Image (tube, rainbow, N blue to C red; front, side):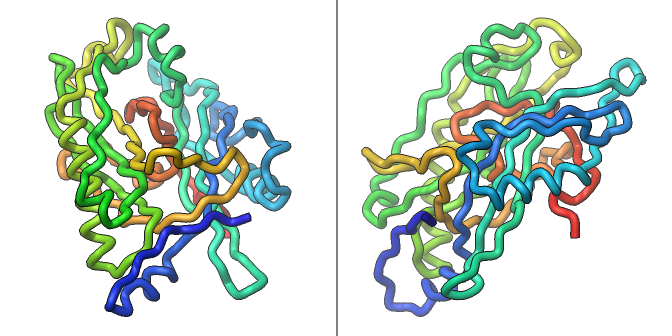
Length: 280
């Protein structure tokens, strides 16, 4: 069953146009084993028994065509096992049919649990990440969704630069209303994130860097909200993806909204996909 969006009244015709951009989606996660030439030697999906048959076939067929930029260590191509997160989107064609496809993806070894990250000395770790305050102005209009934040961390472990790359909403209004809601949530997320602090890598190549770029999806949900279980559909209005002016390493193939809320992503550990997510 596809998820439902919250809608609120508006005197303008805008909400009807916004409804056309609504996507029902789910995040599908797993692993890919990448050969030295960048091709996929194996694809493993998490909890495949919970995924719709059509989604399983879609990902498996797409994965067979993927090719990544080879992972080089000391100039030599190496095999890699990378964490995968895909956003599968379903858009309504008519009363009976939906068009299902892979909307976005993210591939990298950085999608670790907090326990895994704390155990590694070669990764950047959070010290203090106090969650943002739910803005009263956003609460009054029913605004909820996810803000995808990118941060530049300096050698003191403090945030030097930050930017909201995308804001996806689970509420419908006119375009102007949606813009205001995205702005409310983004400002709250950035105000909190600028105070976050991090422990820098102690060993490895990353320990020698002057700055680190990390991404953190931040959820804004009402008290008592229960996110759909893995393999179930949820609905949202995707916001535009914007590039941080200082992020020269931005990879357009790696989309923010394929990242999992609450996970810290180290941009240097992401892998570059050279082929389309979905062929044809």
